[in-house]
Length: 410
Image 1 (cartoon, rainbow, N blue to C red):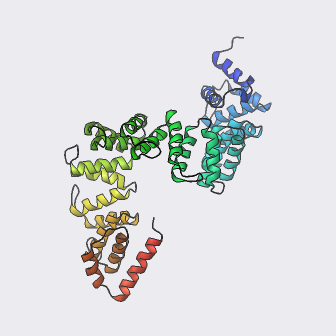
Image 2 (cartoon, helix red, strand yellow):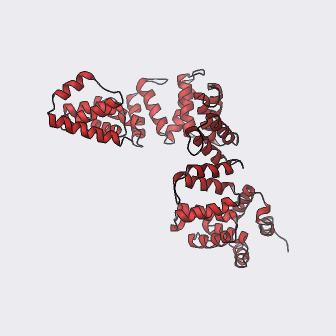
Image 3 (cartoon, rainbow, N blue to C red):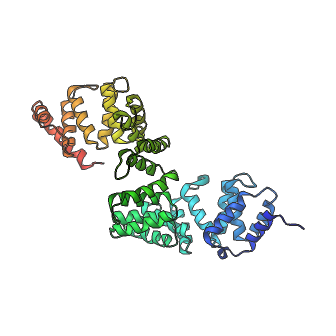
């Protein structure tokens, strides 16, 4: 009987011991094989699964999860992947942990996710070690424990896992679970970056921009930012666009910079949208266009970016690029003020004191003025005038409210 190339590959996978194949290649090969399954392949797969073959069970579970050769069935996927995991198949254990973590098929259970990630991690599977580290980092299904997170990330990173290396870089930068060490952060970011991991390339570039753990070198930063941006990383696109537009340590090229900013903004990156808004508002590298500026500011503001919210408020207040609306200005200033944007807090205080777009409320105005003042945003004359307009009781209330707000500052 002639065996097709696909069927021969499938049979070869069955007879190979699970751990005889390199971990990453094994998973890639299995997923590729499962993606090509047809209904004719399922009976053989099911037969071997019923005989207790963990590799077949894992593949049958993936088939039900992916809808390859069978109709998607989360319950059957969980059943067969659980069987393989219970037999010690580490790829199945990691997949089962992921299913419980994501709640695929309605089976969400953080504690079980941790349990299965741990089983695979203890067998040395790098992806599971990274997943377990993430659980400790976030406190999902287990107590938050930075030291345990760092330990598992280190095991995964030493096997070349770029996600884990990048996570370790950030932990080393801020001293979470490991000593604060910028040079160590650079080492881990570089490891991630050199695998082609875009986030690692972006993070390494930022160290070169700031001179943290590496010599300050904008040209080298630009190289890493370009690599990350070319992979579609929106943070890198925004940073690269701003550097090129401003000529910050590199030849100025705002035409090219704006292209990167536009790419990031169109992907929904709030920083990119806000940067485009600023450039259209000021006419930096583009023809001044308040309407376009408002449009980009609004997109970023709707994502919760306080600087953009403050910009939208200012444009509503002045009727610049949009029909004037003092009520909308107050609304957006309030959103930004509640996120601790000092300029928004001060401007909100002024509008509330004057009764612009909202009922006049001197107590509330003074409260916001005190909060803004704590960030260095104030006007002594306005403060004195407003304070003199308050009764002793109003002043006390404003001071108490401001103190309460500052105690729980975002």
